[in-house]
Length: 386
Ligand SMILES: [Fe+2]
Image (cartoon, rainbow, N blue to C red; front, top):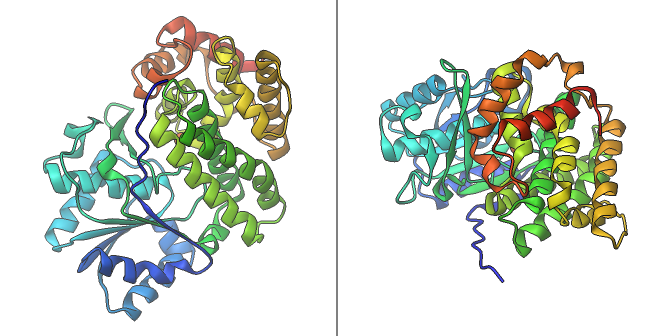
C-alpha cells in the first residue's frame, strides 16, 4: 500500500456574515496593513467591497485596494499589485473575488519571497519557507483556490497559462460567507460549480489519489449534485449557496492533495486560446476525458457511488458515472460540445501542444501525453460523440 501526504494548512471559517471575522484573523496573523486584491466589477457593481471596507474601518485596520484583477489574471497585473504593496508597506494580503483575485494574491505572495517578475517563477515547489499572510474571501463557489496550492496566471504575451504550485501559497485563512455569492451571475454560478465537480472527479481518478482526498472528493460530489441545481433554481437559497462553498472547498482540498488530470490540462488550453471560462472549459471536456480514461479507471465506481448509483461492476459503474455527469450538465442547461462554443478543429494542434505541456496531465490515470490521446478526446468533445 502506497503512502501519501495530505496537507490542508488553511484555517476555514464558514457562515453567513463571517466577513466580520476578517480583522480578527488579520490581527492574529500579525498583519498591520493589508492589500485588498479584487476586481472593478465587484468594487463598482456590488456592495461586497463596501461591506468589507466597512468591516476593516470598523476595526481601524489599515488597507490599500488593488482592483485591477481581470477574469484571467495576467503576469503584468500581478507585478503591478506587488509594486503597489511594496510601495505602501503592506504586510498581509486579503483577496476578495473569484479564483483570479485569489490567484493574483498568491502570486504576489510568491514575489514577496522571490522578488523580480512573476513570469520568472512559474513551476512546482518554488518557495523554501512560508510567505506573507493571506486571508482569502471567495465570492464564487468552485475554484477551491481558497484552500489550494495552485495559482494560474496568464502570460499575456505568449498566450499561455503559467502554473505555480507550492504548499506555502495556500492561503492562511479562507472565509466562506454565502452572502457574498448572491451577486454571482447565473452562468458564473453554473461554471464555477462545474469546476468544483471536475476537481472532485479528477482527484478521485488521479494516480495520486489517497483515501483522505477520496473522502473530500466523494462528499464534494454529493453536495454539488444536491445543491447546484437548488442554487440555479433559487439563487437566494443561502443554505444551498453555503453548501456549494463547502463543496468547492472540499474539491480544492482534494485536488491539492491528489492532483487533477487531462480534463484540466485541456481546459487550461481552451482558456488560454479562446478565453473560455475555466469552469465551462472543464464542463466541455469532463465527460469525454472520463470516457478516454474509463479503460484504466475502475475508480469511477466511487464517482458513481457519490452520484447515488449502486453498481458492483466497475466498468458498468464507470459508464453510469459518465452518463450521470452528462445528465447533470444537461440539467444545468450547459453546452456539451466544443463546436457550440466556437472551437475550431484547425486549432486542435495548438490545443494539444499546450495540453501536453500542462503539469495537470502527469497524474492522469491513462497515459495522455501524446497528440493522439488529446485528439481522441477533442474529437469526441467537438460534436458530443460519447
Ligand atoms: Fe479547476
